[in-house]
Image (cartoon, rainbow, N blue to C red; front, side, top):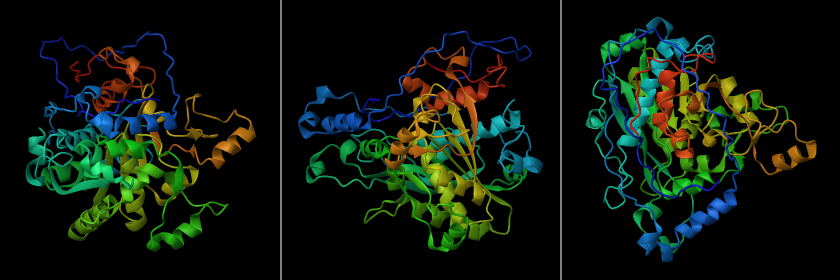
Length: 456
């Protein structure tokens, strides 16, 4: 799959309709568009060569060879947080997945819908606070201080306080000539999200606990794209404090969990002046728990695209250290992260993962292949019917992945408001939030009274 190499723009904001509509009882909107076959070919070697060509200095000096790298400051979300929303205190563990969201996904529970959208807005803030302009001296850093980040992103009433900016660092070794390249090529460490904690008493009461949020944006920089293409699996290091429990629960064949090389690199790499994302998160969560450890706490890690993968790694890592802390992942449009052993370890430690998936989004179908997995539902990537020798060769190449957690599957073609189902549109965070807002059930995929409209 050949991808355009340019700095991603922040997700476009959504605007409620300014016209007066007669509000009727919710009814189903079903689309009869013919099913379109999506090309899922993922020749990563070709994509990597394309990237290599794009960052060659001879091309860098020729501005006509590149799409515009400018990105105007994003406008804020138009659906603000409302501290008077439905109280979920008595059922908060249900909505955090302690019962694996049984009975809440189909049909989609309205309170769960509101929670998913709420965490989606936290991800929007991670995008909106990122400096996309490569000509800015602040490129790839956070645009706003912690104290005003939510307000500047159009979310003044979250009830949460940002306590830490987070950075991800690429572990790719760069050649010397990169020092002379533009910042969008050479930037090795960049702002990727933040940690926030709920401090509003009314919101804590509504939620039934004090919630900690870690929110991650998706891929934006050149080196993050390169890391995405490092799709082979690699062993996941086990923290010393967890080795005994791991050895007790490890797979029968003695093998440990494996995850995608590029995602792990972005999570664990560091520079002389920047700690790894892994260390930043662990230290901040530890500090917050020490401050509020006597209260009911929860950790919700959320992200879109690359951020969804980092969210899964973060949740796994935190749960290995803080065993009693309820840890939940709400991910949007995330790629696969690890193998079957990784999934089993997530399940054994009690980490809950809810993956929001758009059937038309190819990013959710990569990397690698899925073998004999009851979660896999796409025949183009499900290889259970292939001969054993083919499966063995793919396994040897370390390309066998497994889906994790529960899945809320949506479809772009179910919405009457999406005029396009191209690759980019289907993967946008804004599309995901629109589909979550409209989804009713598998038999009634889109409600006519959905209030989230898209600006095209």
